[in-house]
Image (tube, rainbow, N blue to C red; front, side):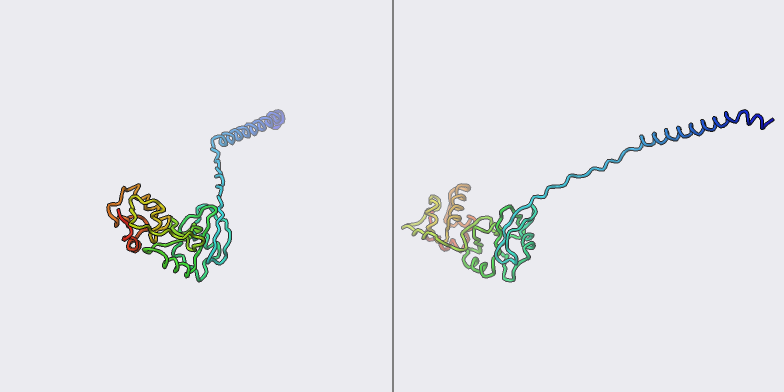
Amino acid sequence: MFNDLTSKYKPFIVLGVIIFILTGLNLYMLYLLNEKEETPEIVTQVEPKKTIKLLKVDIKGEIKNPGLYEVESGSRVMDVINKAGGLNNTADTTVINLSKKVKDEMVILIYSKEEVLKMKEKSEASEIVCPEVNDACAKDEVLEPLIETNEKAPAEIPAGKININTATLEELQTLTGIGEAKAQAIIEYRSQNGKFSSTEDIKNVNGIGEALFEKIKNNITV
């Protein structure tokens, strides 16, 4: 009798099993979909590439491989020297600002020991004189060129003394050791600080030291 019942309800039993399995699969799929919705997506942000600015710098003189080099913005004079193979044995960087940041179209001239010696012999009050062509010179202000070519003969000092409170650019240049840069510095100093109270006050001007003052003190007045 049991077998008869089983045979009679077998299709319903099979159908029930199938429905049970399908229901279980549907519930499982719903569970997976719900998990996916609740799981936050991790978005990886890719930083944009930084544009590197390249500068062209001309380095020459006492360097192993002089020439034109491309360096990244923010590079220093020493970085260019290293890129050019380093210094020659005869090089002297006493008057070179190795930490100076380079700029586009910059000229770096590395001097020899002999050239630096000549600069020091020519300079006044331990003042370094660099040629105008060198952008890496340790002095911010160009005083006078190292090699003087086609220069006009200096004007003679007129009779009497030069009044440093009223003298023009040309008049100041008639004094021994006073070139255009120093004459301009004197004029700028008195325009910013007022008239000189005494001749010794001229030593307050950048570039005029005791040694130069001794040379001009008898030819100036206030």
